[in-house]
Length: 188
Image (tube, rainbow, N blue to C red; front, side):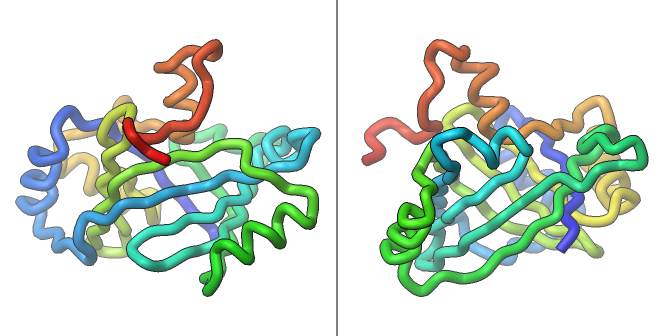
């Protein structure tokens, strides 16, 4: 699957919900907690290639996801105003066993991040309202024309688009020396 998305930071998640509601969006899910574990080998091969191997537990469901960049015509990923990735995802019935399989293959958890997410839909878009330890963000995923159209209706434009990962945002805000997991206080 080809994933095209942007993030927009919002100051207040409740105000973002009101804005989303005014555009006619309907929530597809309640607000749920996500716990994500990102894997790599000892050499950091996946991260060096801008690839992601993630085990996500959310709402009683676990998925294993692999993402890689899709190069543009110049061979560079993320050259435009949208983040474009090729994504493969499968549901996992036993997250502990999947973790053991990944470790047996030489992968280990290199980063963990958490968020609360509520999912909406409009046109061909999936919209996620994410509340993370470093702020709240709307993630708009779908065709670029629909992304731009909804962003405008919500009062945002291309200057507000963020194509960085939550890890990149976290590192910028926490500082390289304080890098660790992006988890809520009291997380185990």
